[in-house]
Image 1 (cartoon, rainbow, N blue to C red):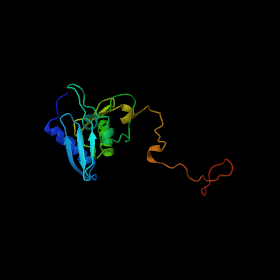
Image 2: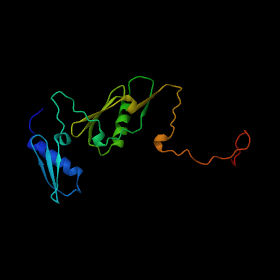
Image 3: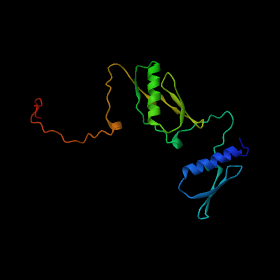
Image 4: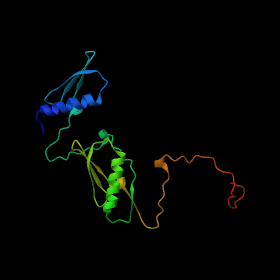
Length: 175
């Protein structure tokens, strides 16, 4: 909407600024009805913030989505191997939830909904959501596909000394 901020919303803006700047010597934060804000520091200097920097306006019916960037959401969690292209089992859905939770312990996640195809909606304490595609949560394979891991995600160092082997016979025990 376009209305003025409530006292509660103004307080939330103040809290967010203070929380993000604990060591900046802020002495006062004045939030105006439109969201524009003046931050005063110990040395008397001020910083003006525009409404775009302090609030996100939305219209009723508009989804409250959060790309997760500002939450520092970690999308780099283990993908669950899923055979074929059928729906995920409850066990696989639970494994997806556990991987997301494990990778994001301090992100204030309140709910994780995993759909049959692996697409997932993560809900945060502030009511915002982040949608994940099946490519981000699962790895489908067919029987016969090799399940291998190039080691990149485990920081595997493949740059080790090679053992010199004479000829093209089998390796000896010493080698």
